[in-house]
Length: 263
Image (cartoon, rainbow, N blue to C red; front, side, top):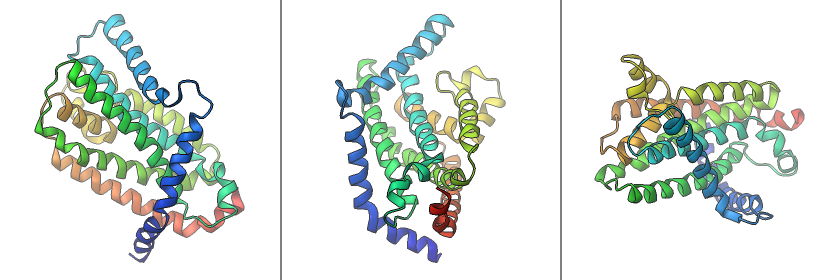
């Protein structure tokens, strides 16, 4: 409990730094680009168009409002995927900073969450625009957005802290994560409907035991289908996310003094 108290105090102390650093990273990312911040919009739109071509034209699937359907999947996946992949070598990539000043290492994960969280919010804003274009009704179920995104955030943050710790010591973890993420991508229903394309009861199992497919499905429910999320499963995964976060924070507190020696 003492370490969690220290964690909360450090978040308060370094929150300003994290926000400033995230802003600087976002500005640097598009500094030499002709299209500037427009790339944050173009990237998910281009991916959406690719999946529309493959699924609707090549495989002739007729999922209703498919552009909105797939864009929700891409938005959630991009946030999760980029957070995980950027965390594997985060300590080594930030060694110029951590070797000069003391910084609780989970602050680096927090900074990344602001960067990719901002991009995710841009994509979610585009989803609202797509809903207008495809005449999907705005309902009270959209109020569940905050709770579902909080679940995605806490789950991802905890996993990233754990992966960042082990990635500092295990060089091959980057390759393992890339393979694991590719496997997870195809089982998360990014561009297909798990409920209709996979037979019962395997579709229910997949939507329950895979947190990313579950979160994507719940976002689709509130944006497109006016359905209440599965609160019980959300609560279970939220508790698991908290457990992951506590494990990651404790690992970092225990070993962060050794990170400098490794990098």
